[in-house]
Amino acid sequence: MAEIERHSFDVLVVGAGGAGLRAAIAAHDAGAKVGIVCKSLLGKAHTVMAEGGIAAAMANVWKEDNWKVHFRDTMRGGKMLNHWRMAQLHAQEAPDRVRELEEWGALFDRTPDGLISQRDFGGHRYARLAHVGDRTGLELIRTLQQRAVALGIEVFMECTVTRLFKDGGRIAGAFGYWRESGRFVAFEAPSVVLATGGIGKSYKVTSNSWEYTGDGHALALEAGASLVNMEFVQFHPTGMVWPPSVKGILVTESVRGDGGVLRNSEGRRFMFDYIPEFFKAETADSEEEADRWYEDKTNNRRPPELLPRDEVARAINAEVKAGRGSPHGGVFLDIASRRTPEYIRRRLPSMYHQFKELADVDITAEPMEVGPTCHYVMGGVAVDPDTGESAVPGLYAAGEVAGGMHGANRLGGNSLSDLLVFGRRTGLNAAYAAARLKRRPEIGDDDVRAASEHALAPFGIEGGENPYAVQHDLQEVMHNLVGIIRTADEMEQALTDLAALRERITRLSVEGHRQYNPGWHLALDLHNMLRVSECIAKAALERTESRGGHTRDDYPATDDSWGKVNLHCRLDGDGVAIAREPLPQMPDDLRELFN
Ligand code: FAD
Image (spheres, rainbow, N blue to C red):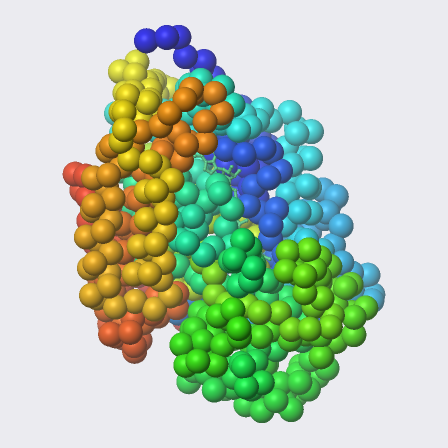
């Protein structure tokens, strides 16, 4: 076997989005030698696309806000399946993480009295999202990236991790390839933090970029960790629907937070027809009250357009199905008739440019056409809430790849705060654990050889399956059979189709060289996309109820007995096994908040 490039760190962070960068900074601050590996260029991670803001109960706009209200909103939004301890830590620590970002140089929008401004978002009782126009993720990444670089943390860009190594039961490092040269690289590290983001590319219509192929989810599963809540996939209610080339691109919830309303083809503000019992007490039941709320939030209830995302996505889906959709299969999102052009351009500059450039629509003068798009996965690696460690010693996860925090449905803004809170906690604990070790785990030559052979396999098959065709078929299966509304028959069909795809990926073949070969990269990603899709389909078939981001046409009601368990996916031979595990018990003082 040719000599392979090797590096050694105390903590290896896989992923350079908000979670990975925050973890790397924390691990460095705790004294560890840290390396970051990322599949794209530094600064290009998904976090950069985040628009609306960071949820944190800072009480800058509403003095009534505090961590307990944020905790309650998060648990209710997650339909009570969230790990209570994660939701508690998140709500308690998010304000400090935002203030810390500001100390490190982030420039937030301000209130008239000079505090960090906070905006309204679905499911949050008070205006709570710290933001920078609709470019919050860009500012977050810029700040963390500058700090990580200034601290001298080593970054391996355009380098994809394809395997984790273990020594005995403990993590020993990772194996990857340079995207440009195709050469291999091995990282020795007793602590590995997965911060690889989500899974959206398993679906046909998604707001996610090419990087979201579920790599961290699959790596963790294959290393022996479990994935929790995988049946819960968030379809954001408002993605672009036209033109086809931009279908799925996100239209931020801030449009609705800033006054935009949803209408069907008859001009009706239809969300009033879809207010669920659970949210009736706090949702306006007339247009007049909903409109007054923007000016007077104390004496009026919130507009139904700001219900949690799962509710709004289902309502849009139902309107389109009932034949009351817009010309291109969505509904209308109208802010033009409700706010001045100056206000819209100032508050939503990216949305203004996005529609102007991609769809030739001026959102200050005409409504947008929008529809649901696969946006976020609530499911992820099951971790200890305080440390971020998975069931595999030395393997950690933070950010979208980790599970538990958001339960059945994530509230908008709660991801950026999640990245900061749990990125920091995980980085610190990964560093402490590495420092405590008496013997560093080692990477075996046989393991490196096996990882190389696995990666090169598609070059050895002639005339086999085309990775692009397999990806297309996988996305069709997930979109059509395990999408926003699900039934047992369709998901059983999906599992049959996924089994056929599993057979096809053993015959993937690629042409050309190892140098910058996207077909080869996709062939390797497909293993992960398929693994994640199997977990979603199996868990979704098992959960015979509707809750949050999981809607069953054949089981439309929420079932209390399902409110007591989470589903965990583990690898069993070559397949995925599902186990029901009881929810962790919430202490009485927190439980009282829901009375
Ligand atoms: P990412 O930021 O995606 O980073 C993943 C990193 O992992 C990347 O560096 C990638 O290169 C790397 N990686 C992946 N696989 C590998 C591999 N095999 N080897 C090496 N590196 C790998 N949330 C909010 O809270 N507020 C918002 O306003 C908001 N707006 C959003 C708008 C859009 C358009 C989208 C798509 C999402 C939005 N979200 C928002 C969600 C939020 O942005 C994401 O959940 C969050 O940024 C995920 O961060 P992360 O650090 O977990 O992953």
